[in-house]
Length: 446
Image 1 (spheres, rainbow, N blue to C red):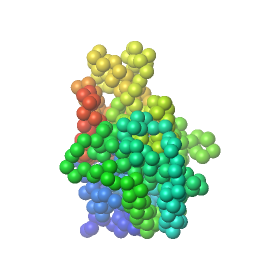
Image 2 (image 1 turned 45 degrees about the vertical axis):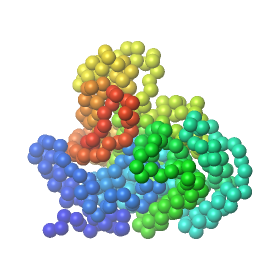
Image 3 (image 1 turned 60 degrees about the vertical axis):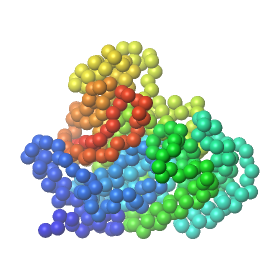
Image 4 (image 1 turned 60 degrees about the horizontal axis):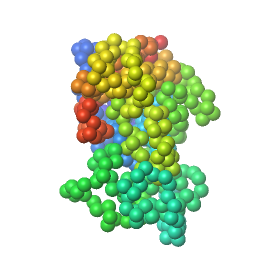
Protein backbone atom coordinates (compact mmCIF):
# COMPACT_ATOMS: atom_id res chain seq x y z
CA UNK A 1 0.00 0.00 0.00
CA UNK A 2 1.34 3.46 -0.90
CA UNK A 3 2.19 5.30 2.32
CA UNK A 4 1.69 8.66 0.58
CA UNK A 5 -2.05 9.31 0.48
CA UNK A 6 -3.38 11.99 -1.85
CA UNK A 7 -4.36 14.95 0.31
CA UNK A 8 -4.95 18.42 -1.10
CA UNK A 9 -3.77 21.11 -3.63
CA UNK A 10 -0.48 21.73 -5.34
CA UNK A 11 1.25 22.91 -2.19
CA UNK A 12 0.23 19.87 -0.15
CA UNK A 13 -0.26 16.89 -2.48
CA UNK A 14 0.11 14.13 0.16
CA UNK A 15 -0.78 13.34 3.77
CA UNK A 16 1.93 12.39 6.26
CA UNK A 17 -0.49 10.72 8.71
CA UNK A 18 0.78 7.19 8.05
CA UNK A 19 4.45 8.16 8.51
CA UNK A 20 3.63 10.07 11.68
CA UNK A 21 1.67 7.10 13.09
CA UNK A 22 4.66 4.84 12.50
CA UNK A 23 7.07 7.25 14.20
CA UNK A 24 4.73 7.63 17.18
CA UNK A 25 4.38 3.86 17.56
CA UNK A 26 8.15 3.32 17.38
CA UNK A 27 8.77 6.06 19.95
CA UNK A 28 6.17 4.68 22.37
CA UNK A 29 7.55 1.15 22.04
CA UNK A 30 11.23 2.05 22.33
CA UNK A 31 11.22 5.23 24.37
CA UNK A 32 14.11 6.36 22.18
CA UNK A 33 14.31 9.42 19.96
CA UNK A 34 13.68 8.46 16.33
CA UNK A 35 16.42 9.29 13.79
CA UNK A 36 14.87 10.85 10.69
CA UNK A 37 15.66 12.91 7.63
CA UNK A 38 12.85 15.37 6.99
CA UNK A 39 14.04 15.73 3.41
CA UNK A 40 13.38 12.01 2.95
CA UNK A 41 10.10 12.06 4.88
CA UNK A 42 8.58 14.41 2.30
CA UNK A 43 10.31 13.41 -0.96
CA UNK A 44 7.79 15.30 -3.09
CA UNK A 45 9.36 18.53 -1.81
CA UNK A 46 12.50 19.42 -3.70
CA UNK A 47 15.49 20.69 -1.74
CA UNK A 48 15.84 24.35 -2.68
CA UNK A 49 13.25 26.57 -4.28
CA UNK A 50 9.60 26.39 -3.22
CA UNK A 51 7.29 29.32 -3.73
CA UNK A 52 8.77 32.39 -2.02
CA UNK A 53 10.79 30.67 0.73
CA UNK A 54 14.09 32.03 -0.58
CA UNK A 55 12.99 35.54 -1.47
CA UNK A 56 15.67 36.83 0.92
CA UNK A 57 18.63 35.23 2.70
CA UNK A 58 18.58 34.96 6.50
CA UNK A 59 20.68 33.09 9.07
CA UNK A 60 19.55 29.76 10.54
CA UNK A 61 16.35 29.41 8.55
CA UNK A 62 14.06 26.53 9.50
CA UNK A 63 14.02 23.75 6.93
CA UNK A 64 10.67 24.05 5.11
CA UNK A 65 10.38 20.25 5.06
CA UNK A 66 9.93 20.21 8.86
CA UNK A 67 6.99 22.60 8.83
CA UNK A 68 5.52 20.85 5.78
CA UNK A 69 5.73 17.41 7.38
CA UNK A 70 3.61 18.37 10.39
CA UNK A 71 1.20 20.58 8.46
CA UNK A 72 0.53 17.72 6.03
CA UNK A 73 -1.20 15.85 8.85
CA UNK A 74 -4.69 16.79 9.99
CA UNK A 75 -4.03 14.75 13.13
CA UNK A 76 -1.44 17.28 14.22
CA UNK A 77 -3.61 20.23 13.25
CA UNK A 78 -7.19 20.25 11.95
CA UNK A 79 -7.65 21.46 8.40
CA UNK A 80 -9.40 24.59 9.68
CA UNK A 81 -6.89 25.05 12.52
CA UNK A 82 -4.81 28.04 13.50
CA UNK A 83 -0.99 27.88 13.43
CA UNK A 84 1.53 30.04 15.30
CA UNK A 85 5.28 30.57 15.11
CA UNK A 86 6.42 32.94 17.91
CA UNK A 87 10.04 32.88 16.64
CA UNK A 88 9.13 33.12 12.98
CA UNK A 89 12.29 34.50 11.38
CA UNK A 90 11.40 35.01 7.74
CA UNK A 91 8.13 33.12 7.97
CA UNK A 92 8.86 29.55 6.92
CA UNK A 93 6.03 28.23 9.10
CA UNK A 94 3.72 31.12 8.18
CA UNK A 95 4.16 30.46 4.45
CA UNK A 96 3.73 26.69 4.78
CA UNK A 97 0.63 27.17 6.93
CA UNK A 98 -0.80 29.51 4.30
CA UNK A 99 -0.07 26.98 1.55
CA UNK A 100 -1.87 24.33 3.61
CA UNK A 101 -4.96 26.56 3.72
CA UNK A 102 -4.75 27.29 7.44
CA UNK A 103 -4.78 30.58 9.33
CA UNK A 104 -1.29 31.54 10.53
CA UNK A 105 0.16 33.93 13.12
CA UNK A 106 3.80 34.95 13.49
CA UNK A 107 6.02 37.09 15.71
CA UNK A 108 9.66 38.16 15.55
CA UNK A 109 11.82 40.84 17.18
CA UNK A 110 13.76 41.66 14.00
CA UNK A 111 11.95 44.22 11.79
CA UNK A 112 13.75 42.83 8.72
CA UNK A 113 12.31 39.37 9.41
CA UNK A 114 8.83 40.83 9.79
CA UNK A 115 9.13 42.70 6.47
CA UNK A 116 10.34 39.59 4.63
CA UNK A 117 7.54 37.45 6.09
CA UNK A 118 4.91 39.98 5.06
CA UNK A 119 6.29 40.28 1.53
CA UNK A 120 6.72 36.56 0.93
CA UNK A 121 3.19 35.70 2.06
CA UNK A 122 1.40 38.43 0.08
CA UNK A 123 0.35 37.76 -3.51
CA UNK A 124 1.16 40.71 -5.77
CA UNK A 125 0.08 41.25 -9.39
CA UNK A 126 3.01 40.54 -11.69
CA UNK A 127 2.03 43.33 -14.07
CA UNK A 128 2.00 45.87 -11.25
CA UNK A 129 5.40 44.68 -10.02
CA UNK A 130 6.93 45.01 -13.48
CA UNK A 131 5.56 48.53 -13.87
CA UNK A 132 6.93 49.55 -10.48
CA UNK A 133 10.31 48.01 -11.31
CA UNK A 134 10.54 49.97 -14.58
CA UNK A 135 9.61 53.16 -12.73
CA UNK A 136 12.37 52.52 -10.20
CA UNK A 137 14.95 52.09 -12.95
CA UNK A 138 13.79 55.34 -14.54
CA UNK A 139 13.90 57.20 -11.22
CA UNK A 140 17.34 55.74 -10.50
CA UNK A 141 18.74 57.21 -13.72
CA UNK A 142 17.30 60.63 -12.91
CA UNK A 143 18.19 60.65 -9.22
CA UNK A 144 21.45 62.28 -8.10
CA UNK A 145 21.08 62.00 -4.34
CA UNK A 146 24.33 62.05 -2.38
CA UNK A 147 22.86 61.17 1.02
CA UNK A 148 22.65 57.68 2.44
CA UNK A 149 21.19 56.15 5.62
CA UNK A 150 23.36 55.77 8.71
CA UNK A 151 25.06 52.39 8.35
CA UNK A 152 27.66 50.90 10.64
CA UNK A 153 31.18 51.27 9.13
CA UNK A 154 29.74 51.95 5.68
CA UNK A 155 33.11 52.80 4.09
CA UNK A 156 34.51 49.50 5.34
CA UNK A 157 31.79 47.42 3.68
CA UNK A 158 31.21 49.29 0.40
CA UNK A 159 33.14 51.05 -2.32
CA UNK A 160 32.28 54.75 -2.83
CA UNK A 161 30.63 53.92 -6.17
CA UNK A 162 28.43 51.22 -4.59
CA UNK A 163 27.37 53.56 -1.78
CA UNK A 164 26.32 56.16 -4.35
CA UNK A 165 24.33 53.70 -6.46
CA UNK A 166 22.63 52.00 -3.51
CA UNK A 167 21.62 55.44 -2.20
CA UNK A 168 20.11 56.39 -5.55
CA UNK A 169 18.25 53.09 -5.80
CA UNK A 170 16.89 53.39 -2.25
CA UNK A 171 15.65 56.90 -3.08
CA UNK A 172 13.99 55.61 -6.27
CA UNK A 173 12.13 52.89 -4.34
CA UNK A 174 11.16 55.53 -1.78
CA UNK A 175 9.13 57.30 -4.48
CA UNK A 176 6.75 54.32 -4.60
CA UNK A 177 3.56 54.59 -2.54
CA UNK A 178 3.55 52.58 0.68
CA UNK A 179 2.03 49.14 0.28
CA UNK A 180 2.69 45.59 -0.82
CA UNK A 181 4.49 46.55 -4.05
CA UNK A 182 6.91 48.83 -2.22
CA UNK A 183 7.52 46.13 0.39
CA UNK A 184 8.38 43.63 -2.37
CA UNK A 185 10.85 46.11 -3.89
CA UNK A 186 12.37 46.86 -0.47
CA UNK A 187 12.90 43.16 0.22
CA UNK A 188 14.55 42.82 -3.20
CA UNK A 189 16.71 45.86 -2.47
CA UNK A 190 17.65 44.52 0.97
CA UNK A 191 18.87 41.28 -0.63
CA UNK A 192 21.40 43.09 -2.77
CA UNK A 193 22.76 45.32 0.01
CA UNK A 194 24.70 42.30 1.21
CA UNK A 195 25.49 40.92 -2.25
CA UNK A 196 26.97 44.21 -3.41
CA UNK A 197 29.01 44.69 -0.24
CA UNK A 198 32.56 43.57 0.50
CA UNK A 199 31.29 41.05 3.08
CA UNK A 200 32.05 37.37 2.58
CA UNK A 201 28.83 35.69 1.28
CA UNK A 202 29.79 32.37 2.86
CA UNK A 203 29.42 33.75 6.40
CA UNK A 204 26.22 34.94 8.02
CA UNK A 205 27.80 37.75 10.02
CA UNK A 206 29.64 40.45 8.03
CA UNK A 207 33.33 39.63 7.62
CA UNK A 208 35.49 41.41 5.02
CA UNK A 209 35.73 39.30 1.90
CA UNK A 210 38.88 37.50 0.81
CA UNK A 211 39.66 35.87 -2.50
CA UNK A 212 38.31 32.35 -2.88
CA UNK A 213 37.63 30.04 -5.86
CA UNK A 214 34.47 30.93 -7.74
CA UNK A 215 33.92 34.26 -5.99
CA UNK A 216 31.95 36.81 -7.97
CA UNK A 217 33.76 40.13 -8.36
CA UNK A 218 31.64 42.71 -6.57
CA UNK A 219 33.51 45.60 -8.18
CA UNK A 220 32.67 44.57 -11.73
CA UNK A 221 28.94 44.01 -11.09
CA UNK A 222 26.78 47.10 -10.87
CA UNK A 223 24.12 47.67 -8.24
CA UNK A 224 21.46 47.81 -10.93
CA UNK A 225 22.62 44.46 -12.34
CA UNK A 226 22.30 42.91 -8.88
CA UNK A 227 18.89 44.49 -8.39
CA UNK A 228 17.59 43.41 -11.79
CA UNK A 229 18.75 39.82 -11.27
CA UNK A 230 17.23 39.67 -7.79
CA UNK A 231 13.97 41.19 -8.99
CA UNK A 232 13.62 38.60 -11.75
CA UNK A 233 14.35 35.78 -9.29
CA UNK A 234 11.85 37.10 -6.76
CA UNK A 235 9.25 37.69 -9.46
CA UNK A 236 9.60 34.04 -10.47
CA UNK A 237 9.14 33.01 -6.85
CA UNK A 238 6.00 35.15 -6.58
CA UNK A 239 4.73 33.55 -9.80
CA UNK A 240 5.22 30.10 -8.27
CA UNK A 241 3.40 31.17 -5.11
CA UNK A 242 0.51 32.41 -7.22
CA UNK A 243 0.36 29.06 -9.04
CA UNK A 244 -0.14 27.20 -5.76
CA UNK A 245 -3.50 27.02 -4.06
CA UNK A 246 -2.63 29.16 -1.04
CA UNK A 247 -6.09 29.39 0.45
CA UNK A 248 -7.80 32.55 1.63
CA UNK A 249 -5.81 33.28 4.81
CA UNK A 250 -2.92 35.70 4.80
CA UNK A 251 -0.68 35.27 7.90
CA UNK A 252 -1.22 37.79 10.71
CA UNK A 253 1.47 39.49 12.77
CA UNK A 254 1.26 38.55 16.46
CA UNK A 255 3.75 41.13 17.71
CA UNK A 256 7.49 41.54 18.18
CA UNK A 257 8.01 39.49 21.33
CA UNK A 258 7.37 35.78 21.84
CA UNK A 259 6.80 36.54 25.54
CA UNK A 260 3.91 38.92 24.79
CA UNK A 261 1.87 37.83 21.77
CA UNK A 262 -0.61 40.42 20.59
CA UNK A 263 -3.14 40.95 17.80
CA UNK A 264 -3.32 44.00 15.54
CA UNK A 265 -5.28 46.04 18.08
CA UNK A 266 -2.51 45.58 20.63
CA UNK A 267 -4.62 43.28 22.78
CA UNK A 268 -3.15 39.91 23.83
CA UNK A 269 -3.57 37.05 21.38
CA UNK A 270 -6.60 35.25 22.85
CA UNK A 271 -5.92 32.40 25.26
CA UNK A 272 -6.68 28.86 24.03
CA UNK A 273 -6.99 30.08 20.43
CA UNK A 274 -4.15 28.23 18.65
CA UNK A 275 -4.28 24.61 17.47
CA UNK A 276 -0.61 24.15 16.59
CA UNK A 277 2.66 25.91 17.33
CA UNK A 278 5.67 25.09 15.17
CA UNK A 279 8.79 27.00 16.08
CA UNK A 280 12.56 26.93 16.11
CA UNK A 281 13.59 29.23 18.96
CA UNK A 282 17.07 30.77 19.24
CA UNK A 283 19.96 28.82 20.68
CA UNK A 284 21.70 29.90 23.87
CA UNK A 285 24.32 32.52 23.03
CA UNK A 286 24.62 31.36 19.41
CA UNK A 287 22.31 33.86 17.75
CA UNK A 288 23.64 36.89 15.93
CA UNK A 289 20.56 37.85 13.95
CA UNK A 290 20.98 41.59 14.47
CA UNK A 291 24.69 41.58 13.72
CA UNK A 292 24.13 39.31 10.70
CA UNK A 293 21.49 41.67 9.30
CA UNK A 294 23.06 44.97 10.41
CA UNK A 295 23.75 46.14 6.85
CA UNK A 296 20.18 45.36 5.76
CA UNK A 297 18.75 47.10 8.81
CA UNK A 298 20.81 50.18 8.10
CA UNK A 299 19.92 50.52 4.43
CA UNK A 300 16.23 49.97 5.18
CA UNK A 301 16.49 52.61 7.93
CA UNK A 302 15.16 50.18 10.50
CA UNK A 303 18.09 50.79 12.87
CA UNK A 304 20.92 53.30 13.03
CA UNK A 305 24.31 52.06 14.29
CA UNK A 306 23.57 53.44 17.76
CA UNK A 307 20.26 51.53 17.83
CA UNK A 308 21.58 48.07 16.95
CA UNK A 309 22.42 47.09 20.54
CA UNK A 310 18.96 48.11 21.72
CA UNK A 311 17.41 45.99 18.97
CA UNK A 312 19.61 43.06 19.94
CA UNK A 313 18.51 43.40 23.56
CA UNK A 314 14.96 42.59 22.46
CA UNK A 315 16.07 39.15 21.20
CA UNK A 316 16.07 36.01 23.32
CA UNK A 317 19.41 34.21 23.02
CA UNK A 318 21.44 37.42 22.62
CA UNK A 319 25.18 37.36 23.19
CA UNK A 320 25.52 40.62 25.16
CA UNK A 321 24.54 40.89 28.83
CA UNK A 322 25.16 43.97 31.04
CA UNK A 323 27.94 43.36 33.56
CA UNK A 324 25.72 44.09 36.54
CA UNK A 325 23.55 41.13 35.57
CA UNK A 326 26.34 38.59 35.96
CA UNK A 327 27.93 39.90 39.16
CA UNK A 328 26.26 36.90 40.80
CA UNK A 329 24.99 33.57 39.50
CA UNK A 330 21.39 33.48 38.24
CA UNK A 331 19.52 30.22 38.82
CA UNK A 332 17.30 28.94 36.01
CA UNK A 333 15.25 26.62 38.21
CA UNK A 334 16.41 23.67 36.10
CA UNK A 335 18.61 21.44 38.25
CA UNK A 336 20.78 19.90 35.50
CA UNK A 337 21.26 23.21 33.73
CA UNK A 338 22.21 25.03 36.92
CA UNK A 339 24.76 22.35 37.78
CA UNK A 340 26.57 22.94 34.47
CA UNK A 341 26.17 26.71 34.51
CA UNK A 342 27.67 27.00 37.99
CA UNK A 343 30.80 25.31 36.63
CA UNK A 344 30.80 27.66 33.64
CA UNK A 345 30.32 30.65 35.94
CA UNK A 346 33.58 29.86 37.75
CA UNK A 347 35.60 30.35 34.55
CA UNK A 348 33.37 32.64 32.46
CA UNK A 349 30.58 34.52 34.27
CA UNK A 350 29.44 36.20 31.04
CA UNK A 351 28.86 32.95 29.13
CA UNK A 352 27.06 31.48 32.14
CA UNK A 353 24.82 34.55 32.36
CA UNK A 354 24.04 34.43 28.63
CA UNK A 355 22.91 30.80 28.94
CA UNK A 356 20.95 31.27 32.18
CA UNK A 357 19.22 34.40 30.85
CA UNK A 358 18.29 32.41 27.75
CA UNK A 359 16.55 29.68 29.78
CA UNK A 360 14.79 32.19 32.03
CA UNK A 361 13.44 34.09 29.01
CA UNK A 362 12.55 30.90 27.14
CA UNK A 363 10.45 29.87 30.14
CA UNK A 364 8.53 33.14 29.70
CA UNK A 365 8.08 32.49 25.98
CA UNK A 366 6.95 28.89 26.48
CA UNK A 367 4.53 30.03 29.20
CA UNK A 368 2.98 32.36 26.60
CA UNK A 369 2.83 29.50 24.09
CA UNK A 370 1.04 27.38 26.67
CA UNK A 371 -1.44 30.21 27.31
CA UNK A 372 -2.49 30.59 23.67
CA UNK A 373 -2.60 26.86 22.87
CA UNK A 374 -5.99 25.18 22.97
CA UNK A 375 -6.38 22.25 25.38
CA UNK A 376 -5.13 19.30 23.34
CA UNK A 377 -3.25 21.67 21.03
CA UNK A 378 0.27 20.66 20.03
CA UNK A 379 3.72 22.25 20.06
CA UNK A 380 6.46 21.22 17.63
CA UNK A 381 9.71 22.53 19.10
CA UNK A 382 12.83 22.42 16.91
CA UNK A 383 16.02 22.98 18.90
CA UNK A 384 19.71 22.12 18.85
CA UNK A 385 22.16 21.50 21.68
CA UNK A 386 25.52 23.24 21.78
CA UNK A 387 28.69 23.59 23.83
CA UNK A 388 29.19 26.34 26.41
CA UNK A 389 32.79 26.69 27.58
CA UNK A 390 33.48 23.00 27.02
CA UNK A 391 30.24 21.80 28.63
CA UNK A 392 27.42 20.25 26.63
CA UNK A 393 24.36 22.47 26.98
CA UNK A 394 21.31 20.26 26.48
CA UNK A 395 18.78 22.88 25.43
CA UNK A 396 16.41 20.18 24.17
CA UNK A 397 16.25 18.56 27.63
CA UNK A 398 15.96 21.87 29.49
CA UNK A 399 13.17 23.22 27.29
CA UNK A 400 11.35 19.89 27.51
CA UNK A 401 11.48 20.11 31.31
CA UNK A 402 10.01 23.62 31.16
CA UNK A 403 7.20 22.48 28.87
CA UNK A 404 6.32 19.53 31.08
CA UNK A 405 6.30 21.74 34.17
CA UNK A 406 3.76 24.01 32.45
CA UNK A 407 1.38 21.14 31.68
CA UNK A 408 2.46 19.62 28.40
CA UNK A 409 3.17 15.98 27.66
CA UNK A 410 5.81 14.66 25.28
CA UNK A 411 4.32 12.68 22.38
CA UNK A 412 7.31 12.24 20.08
CA UNK A 413 11.03 12.97 19.97
CA UNK A 414 12.90 13.08 16.66
CA UNK A 415 16.50 13.79 15.67
CA UNK A 416 17.51 15.18 12.28
CA UNK A 417 21.10 15.76 11.17
CA UNK A 418 21.63 19.24 9.75
CA UNK A 419 24.31 21.36 8.20
CA UNK A 420 25.98 23.91 10.46
CA UNK A 421 23.62 26.72 11.38
CA UNK A 422 26.32 29.08 10.16
CA UNK A 423 25.87 31.58 12.99
CA UNK A 424 29.21 31.28 14.68
CA UNK A 425 32.53 32.67 13.52
CA UNK A 426 35.87 31.01 14.12
CA UNK A 427 36.73 33.83 16.51
CA UNK A 428 34.27 32.50 19.09
CA UNK A 429 36.28 29.73 20.72
CA UNK A 430 33.69 29.05 23.41
CA UNK A 431 31.06 27.88 20.90
CA UNK A 432 30.62 24.84 18.70
CA UNK A 433 28.91 23.86 15.50
CA UNK A 434 25.37 22.53 15.75
CA UNK A 435 25.05 19.37 13.67
CA UNK A 436 21.80 17.80 14.92
CA UNK A 437 18.36 19.16 15.58
CA UNK A 438 15.93 17.76 18.11
CA UNK A 439 12.27 17.96 17.24
CA UNK A 440 9.97 17.62 20.23
CA UNK A 441 6.24 17.14 19.74
CA UNK A 442 4.24 18.01 22.85
CA UNK A 443 0.54 18.29 23.64
CA UNK A 444 -1.18 20.65 26.07
CA UNK A 445 -2.87 18.42 28.61
CA UNK A 446 -6.64 18.91 28.69
